[in-house]
Length: 70
Image 1 (cartoon, rainbow, N blue to C red):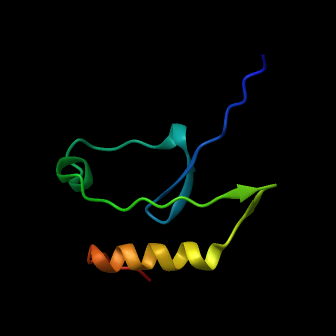
Image 2 (cartoon, one colour):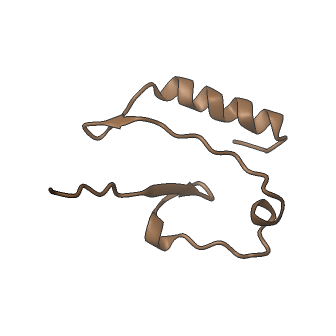
């Protein structure tokens, strides 16, 4: 049976990076206090689906957490 592995990409500090490039300091506030915002978006054939709804969910979560956004 063939195994299929997804390539994980992350949005971190306003940049899209490969999972292998990500590191987190143990002094990071999100790590220490478990505060953070997670949102995922479905991608089919290399295209993100329903991006406006995704952006609104992110903004709503950021507002609740009193996070700044541009």
